[in-house]
Length: 369
Image (cartoon, rainbow, N blue to C red; front, side, top):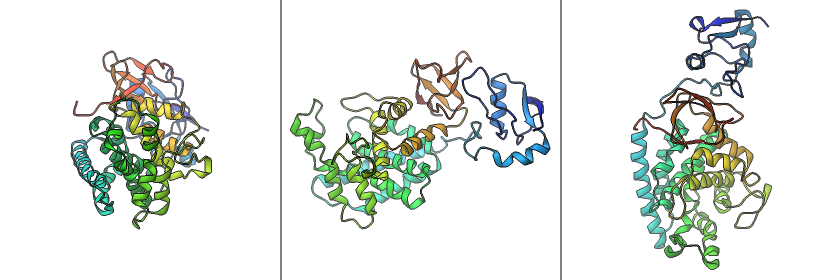
């Protein structure tokens, strides 16, 4: 194929890269057959790459259908995902308060009013559909005192984001949001002294806590507005593919895919949130833990959907590392999306986190900071 090197100042958006381009990195910063975007121009300049191999006009036409699918390019157009952050946070906190009111009613014996639940969770789902990176802010909104109510809302939203990423139609996305939000509604049937106990649970208390998926199922089983597979997902959301979960210790294909969506969402939010008896972990570190240390427990497709939400973060996203250094994402690669190339704010040094594993991204920095 015909190719030529073009200087950065003469490089036009829309041209096609003819070779993988490295910059003292483990993986290419831009892959062969990638269509050049404005973000690529910034990346090339940041890495001091002054000439880029580009297909000639004749070859470009032949290779357009070999390009990466739209949305997977590592130099995707930078978008402001934080424009509606203030509005979302306000609506989210209102939703948590309303959910808490419903939960108190369930404790007193009220039945689940699915219309009210839908009214609480579904408006927030619209924000998640537009900007899945919101899931990385949810743990910052939570607090130990009201953790349970935050957890229910967040699990519903993360479940919706994962379902969307897996390619399901809108109806299933909305159903999964509701199912995720109601997965722990059965905790209302657990005595408060057990639910909020700070010390280690005794055996009887531990057994009682583990009954909450059953209680949740019993509370939703007669609701016609919830699909049957969602009710099964609620019942099974603590099952694991290796049989180590509960209620029934189900394994492999006996565990529904939708229950795995809630399981991953539940685990992700729980591990990234501050709780009465445990400090929170970085979302990026938790994703690595789910992928590696918890391997075999969760469906690979669901875990990949969670990872892909990380990979969709745009170049230029401001971050803080576990050593408290701040910087911005310069490049995300498919082999290690939780460990991108980061440019430090203080020195301008570019660090490949895939090579340097002594620290990790601790959080995303918003425009409010």
